[in-house]
Image (cartoon, rainbow, N blue to C red; front, top):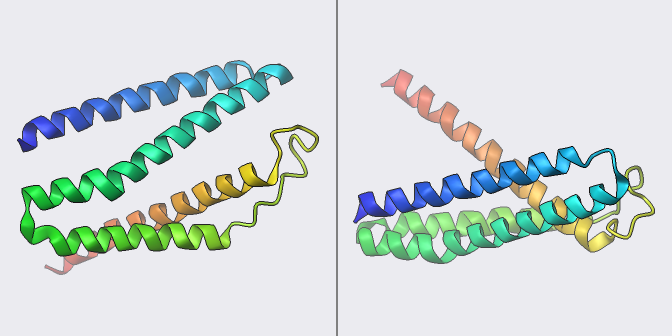
Amino acid sequence: MKDRLKKIVNLIGLITIGITVILAILFFLGINDNAKIASNFNILYYWTLILTVLIAVIAFLVGPILSLLLNLKGLGKSLFFIIGIAVILGLAFILSKGDPNTIYMAKKPENIASIAYYTEVGLFTFYFIAVISIIAVIGSEIRNIIK
């Protein structure tokens, strides 16, 4: 069961990485044309939104449920994970201001406060998770050195 699930998750991960790379290439190919910049930005924005919702659903619903079904002793870890993600998202929402960008695309219709707000939420969430990951890697290496 675990091997099959692992293969499915790896395949889905590779597919999403492939789609993201293709969209990034398309974005940078249209960087010289202002009309293409706006349409490519919208495509990347909606793709990011889809991935964020997908990851949230997996993290909050599918992940803990599968974890509990496969390992009932892991209930504490699952609850810790859910609470940790909720705290990270809460901090990201609190720290985000949502001020529209005044330098790039200042007169474009895409430059509105709600999009800027959710973009900042995504960036702060990424920053928090990246810092936590780096601290975890350094901490585990220090723990291995001490042992």
